Image (cartoon, rainbow, N blue to C red; front, top):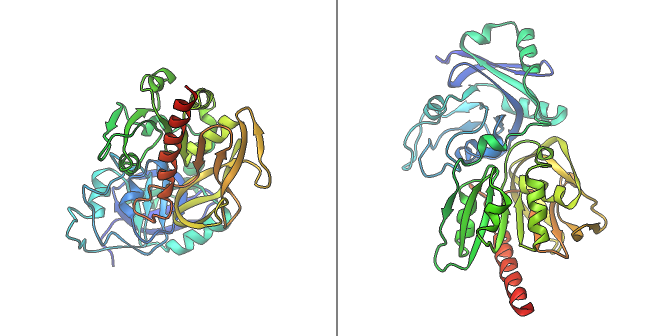
Length: 382
């Protein structure tokens, strides 16, 4: 028998799962999603894309390597709640500094353990992502029907503007590793620390900007490239903020690279719509095909929205021709865009891939090549 206080997971459609408290005691609400990664739980927890989501870990055994201070992808844990089946009783790794339970408790993350996460995953896979609540301690004894009503009163993800919650309050600079070749203006919409590092490895000095930064802040850097990161929430909420800035950058023919949330913003800048997926793509094993090469990449994802662009034709936009460059092999969702007449491209997944896989690292090389090519073209035109 567990000596942990009781807990209950309540889904908005009325399904409940009883287990034991894990992490902090209390109540929490968010969108219930599952991730199938067997590794990288610390990177998942600290990915700002998971803000206001309750993450169900499909792999049963979580926490065996503990927590350290080197692997976080941002300044804090962002998940709204955490659901695991069998939390490790011992943290055993030479880099471990504390247990996962201790870290969740210290950061006030309410979780639940001892539940059938495969059953929860199957339920969400069939019914779609939905709101949920985790209640532990005395709260778990409340009438489940009353708890369902509390869940239904919580905010939905559609229409949620969450970038302001996760972005850096002050801009900062990541210096290039080795020779300085490029200057990049990178919008932090929920950026992971490995992302500017990947650009720094390719000689970029990366100016990480708050999401509140203006076009003038970008142009003052005279950047060789413009980057938009991953992030949480509904991309439609950026229509009056980020989209006009991206369009102004496209007008100036500054090379653009967007990932995840940045892909959705670039899509809206081109004039495409976005929509909420029933299930979303999450985890580190999503198959994506690069349509130019036919190569299939195993990729890391966390997104619940997608770009609505035609797969079977090149689209004419105010910035010229745009094609779908990558597609998900599971459901034909748009996974990347490439402009043919301006220097811009994007992907829907996370190519920095902490904690893996690394099939998509070439995209950072592609960005570096695009910046170099654009610079050389400008010199020859002058």
